[in-house]
Length: 272
Image (cartoon, rainbow, N blue to C red; front, top):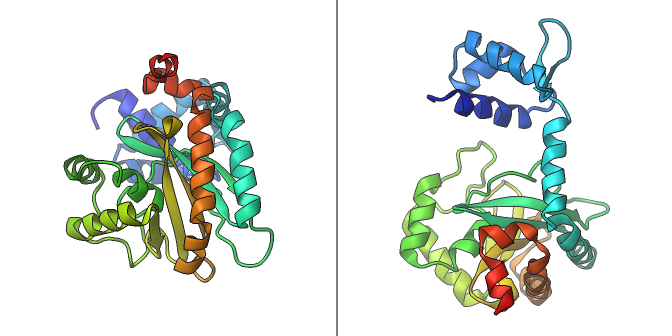
């Protein structure tokens, strides 16, 4: 890391994953920065109201200001207001976890979620909003990659890596580019992606792209996720049309996502 800004965001991104806070030494080690520099950055972030210290010489954690900014942005961008009713309805109909990710430059980021499971075994991570999706191992990522040419898909995957560096990553995730390309071909033929014990151990998911007004422009991906014991291939096949219908509804409503007006040029397309 070279710039002060890069070092600061590395600290912020780390603290997002640890709402209980971390000591300076742990932050320094995790971000590969000198403890003295980390301490100076934390003091400045504290002064600005983005970081708090529980007590003198205690752990540092984010204040609510940063999450509030993110939620405010999603609300003003029209994403949560427009999408949430669709997600809530799909969650109630499927009885499983529904996630919406949106295209953000070269990445896919989870931005909204709805939980349909009310009892028994369920998949409920609770920490994925704002997380950049690992493309090769996730259902949403594979659904997005399947809409691209092979060269474009390979380029995006190469930036992240095929294998997700996480101890909870599923053992059935693609391990090579060749294996991933095979799964993308199957996704195109099937009409939706399938990821079982891939992104996480014990979790299964299916996903489809969200296309602006049914056209070629992909603005995000919509997925259903749940325990592998319940989301078997037959279950997914039975719920595929339900998922596609919800994605089409979101695609038709994407004009209400102010974020896309400037990032994907949808203003000009809407006027055509």
